[in-house]
Image (tube, rainbow, N blue to C red):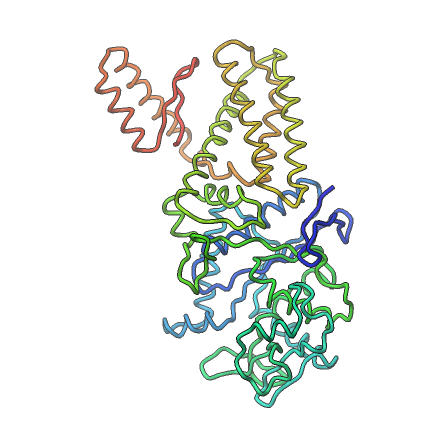
Amino acid sequence: MLKVYNTMTRRKEEFKPLKKGEVSIYCCGVTPYNHPHIGNARPFVTWDVIRRYFAKKGYKVHYIQNFTDVDDKIINAANKEGVTWKDISDRYIKAYFEAMDALNVRHADVYPRVSETMPEIIAMVEKLIAKGYAYVVDNGDVYYSVEKFSHYGKLSGRSLDDMQAGARIEVNTAKHHPMDFALWKAAKPGEPSWDSPWGKGRPGWHIECSTMSLKYLGEKFDFHGGGSDLIFPHHENEIAQSQACIGDDHSFAQYWLHNGFITIHNEKMSKSKNNFFTVKDILKEYPGEVIRFFILQTHYRSPLDFSDERLKEAQTSLARLQNTKAYVDELCAKQGTADTAAELASKAEALRKEFYEAMDDDFNTALAISQMFALSKEINIYYQEVTNGTKAFDAAGFKTVAAIYAEMAEIIGIFEQQEKAEDDGLTDKLMEIIITLRQDARKEKNWAVADKIRDALKDADVVLEDTPNGVRWKKA
């Protein structure tokens, strides 16, 4: 039974899909005005694993993720560079995909943009005005009246009085209540704008996600997610707008999932504090799968402190699993009719069950990965027994083990960036020649040449391993 922690109810609940065999997900995307940082990446890696897991369990997944391509930060960046807002958003949307592709994040089914959803946004604002939940002020701004929505604050667990007392709110005499928020902003000189019944302008931040999620997933869908920083005000305001517009307090998202922050020395990482590391820069030092693995070794709701040391630890841990993958590939290429892998296959089935139980407990990737390490250890033992001749190889039995290991890896999203065989085996042939030359040097006791070859390969991140079946090579 799959249980998820629902921010709305503050407890774990059994997941019951609205449509049998289907899962609908909306995840708030990026505002593309800069390269995504590692904190931006966490929700997308998290939801990628969730999507993979549901798909592996046989669900048809509908996944929507937006781009806020019209925003103050984008406009400011465009003005600073002397280019258009679209130039900025297009540039960094491209950068987003490059970063996420490196992290093995599969693409969403739809990536709606604010700039392409204006008719629907305007229509929703009109409906909220007509129903008495929004009002137009003299300059053409449109505000949502929070006092009209009796459940305002139910996601964040705050009351209007508490919000007002604890907030720094600029005085705006046009508002009916200090916490009222903009649905539509009247145009300012030099800003992008669209025609509306209230004059030229552009949407407020919150209305866009309400409109896009309802457009692509309907009035009720399963999951809405994002970082914990979105609980208030963004997701709180989405609920107020959407449920007021639909007229049903039980509509909109049924489960709210929020990932914890990535911190630097226990302080939240953010561009506003200038204490962030972009995925692009981290990729100069570490492969994308290491970054992904670093994120997933901690449960998604827990804070995750970023450091070079933690990344190195993740790199070492992932290398252990990759080494086992090399053993699996080597054994799968062998022939064997013995019956020696039945016990290993039984252990693999048990660890698969525990892996799924961990994922069923609010997508606990940290615990699931520990089951993968347990299976890795068992495979390594079997590999050594086969290669040193104490056990004959069981091709049929090991096939089950290999499939389970691959299944775990697919859900976690690793082993997907190994070099493609685009050189027609040239690399293997060259390595065979190099290894032969080193072996010849060792036979002739020419240790200086043998060591020179070994050290040169090490500098190129190639490691040689002596096995009973000869010398193996692998990338470090």
